[in-house]
Structure formats: structure tokens, C-alpha cells
Length: 259
Length: 296
Image (tube, rainbow over all chains, first blue to last red):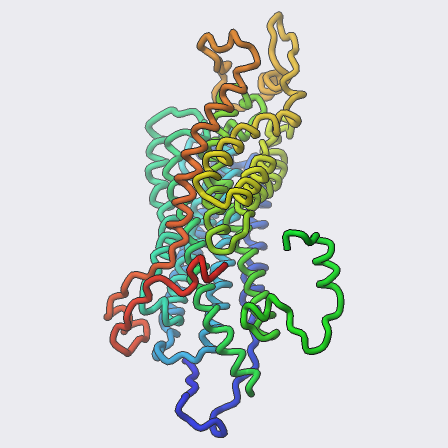
């Protein structure tokens, strides 16, 4: 998969370096598709939240909300697993000999994975999380699978898992430094937000057994906060990328200028 | 640079460069113009990532630690609100200051954090609180920390030191929070007579708008004799908050340094082989070349 530029060959028989170009197609597709998904979910909440989402024992709740819940779970987790398997199956089997220009392109692709990951993190941590807050401060919960939870926990989190874990697998299968060593901060940045999903067990357990009232700063919610702090570790990953790109840029563009 | 204005910089940047003369920034970076252009693309990607990530992370952090004090106007009392909000809000700005200052010498971390939070709440308060659950915007106005953050960044720029920034900046961040927000919330503190009792306008909004899943009792917040000092309660709270923010700022500065570490742990050789590395394990990259000194 990697293209190799053998340095030992004489200059006249070495292939001319390709012009460096960054491919944004999948990046743009991801933004457009994800925006559509998130806006679609919000419109669905607007249409069916207050009308058929208030009581979980009503038949309409089963029709409109539980159908969505049981449909989205296998689809989203299935896509997430399929993407990881694809990344592993198409890995670079000669990762030690990646040419500098290819490596630089892969760093750009890796950065785009991270940007899309942050996009999904915004929708989860800010947009739909506060939507969950105002819903539960308004509507008494009679089920852990409420209209706001179905979107926040069982749609948004699988989506960001796809891109968080995907960025990790991409880096490990295509970028030499991230294959040789495990980026500690990348682990934090992916595993911390990932653990929000199992932490949901603690949250729902607490809501089921204690009448906490819906005070949003209640200690029952602090697990989410500590795990969310791990997002800060993405700064470390970006620093690792910057560190290597500082070395790669002069090498790649010197070759291009020479050609 | 110290004696030049931004305007003169802008004029110089806009003026055509004489042929053969290289931009000093690019020359210092050792990049060709093509490499500099690619580097700028990367910068844009990083800016997008930073804004999206910290809008999500800081908003989540604030809503779950300060939650109701930020969400509802009638929770913005004069004892707990000026105490809790700055302590919660100073954390991420301190961490971002550490990253931006240590690696890039940019004194903008706190302002970036404040702006990201404002961006997040400016979207969700209307779209979620107003449009979905029909709250009046008057009841869900957020606080702002942009003034506090600007002061914090200026103090970092002046002192160029984490400890002094924590002591003076952390304190100022909390102390400025209340007066900087008072302009917005003063109308809601106006007293009104309600069924023979005195309440504030904010309280009245809370009384008449039912929040069926939140506490319905009237919050009695000032239990001690401090209330006999009248409006000094808010300043005492701000002072106390400033004291805590000094330590909180320093702690989160350190956390910012730790979380931006570039350390790689050695990978398992079998995993490496599975992932495509045929050569034996190369020495693990310890700390990268981009030390804070080199990155300056």
C-alpha cells in the first residue's frame, strides 16, 4: 500500500515526486452526511418529542421512539464495527517504508479524522447534551430510554465512537510513529469519551433508585464530566502530529522543488 | 514588534513584496511557499478542531458542574452563583492557556475557551430550551466569562509566568465575573411585591413558569448572619471564589501540560506485526523535537 522512494537509486532513474495534493472528498462527505443525520434527529425530536414522547407506556411511544431505538442501534454499531474492520483489512503491510510524501498525506487524513471526531463531539457534548438537560428538567422520566436519551446516548455516542476509534485504528495501521508506539494522549482522547457509554449504567441506576430531582449539577452526573475532561488530551495528539509534520514538510517540499 | 502597530503590520502584509524577497516568517520556518501553503491548510484544520472540541467539552463540563446556576436566571443568586460559576469556568481556560502559551507563546487560551462556551450556549439556549421545550429566553440566559478571560490572558501576557498568572489572574477572573455579568442581569434583580412578599423579577419568572422536574420549593440561600451586611454578600462570594480560583487555575495549568504531553508508550511487537510493521521494534520516540523552546 505504501509507495517507496528508494534513496539508493541514481537521481535520473528515480521517479519524479508527485505533486502534493490533499484529498478532501471523504472529509466533506462526512461533514455533510453527519450534519444531515444530526439535523434529522433534532427535527424528529421536535416532531415527536412532545406529541408522543411523554409516556413510555403509550403505544405511540413504542411506535415512534422504541422503533427508532431498536433500528438505529444495530445500524450505527454495525457501521462502526465495519469501518474498523475495513481500516484493519486495508492496512499498510509495509508501514516501516512509507515515503515522506505519503506519510505527510496520511497525517493530513489523520487530522481530518480527528476534526470529524471533534464535530461529533460537539453535537454530543454541547448540542444534544443540553437538549437532554432541558428535556429532563421539563418532563418527568418514566424510562431510561427517553426521546432525548435515544438520540444522545444511543445515536450520538455510537457515531463518535466510530470516528474516535476509527482515528485510532487509522493512525495505528498507516502512520509509522503511531504503529511503533501507542500515543498515550490518543488513548485518553478516545477511551475517556468512550467510557461515557458504560457510565450511563451508573447514571440510570442512580435515577432509578434515588429521587434526585433534576438538578443538572448533581453528583450523579459528575462521572460524565471527568470522562469528558479527557477530550483535552486531543491537544497532545495534535502536538504529536505537529511535531512530525515540522520534520516532514521541508523533506517533502524540497523533493518537489528539486523535481 | 513592540513599537509597531497592528495597522502597520497589516499594511505591510498587503503591500506587494519585492521580487526575490522571502517572507521573514516563512524564512524563519525554513519552508518553501508551497510548504507554507500546506502548513496553513493544516492550521485551519487545527482551528476547526479546537473550536469544535472545546465547544463540546467546555459546555458539557459547565452544564454538569454548574448546571442550573448557568441555565436559569432565578438560580443566579448572590451567594452561590458568584462562587460556583468562576471556579467551574476557570478550569478549561487555565488548561488551554497552558497549551497555547507553552507551545506557541499565544496568550489566547482563556479567551478561546470563553468564546467556545459562548458559542455553545448561544446555539442551544434558543434551539433547545426555547424551540423544543418552550422556555422563555429570559429564564435561561447564560452567564458570560469573556471579560474575565480577557483579563486572565492579559495577565499571562504581562507576567509570562504560570504561578503569577494563577495568583493574580485566577483571582481577577473570579472577582470580575460578578460585575461583568451584573450589566446583563441587573434588571432581573429589581424587587417586586408579590402576594404581600418581596421577590425579584427573576424569582417571579421562575414562579410563573413551571419546571415540572426541578425543585419546586423556594430556595433559601442565605442562612447565616452574613445577609445582615446587605449587598456585600456578592462581593464576599466573589472574594472567596477568587481564592479558590488561584489554586484551581494552577492545578488545571498543570493538567493542561500533562494532557498535551507527546509521549508514546512502546507498542507490543505482535500488535505491530499485525498492523504492518515488519521490522523489529524501533526505539520508542521519547519526547519529540518540538520542545516549547523549539516551538517558540
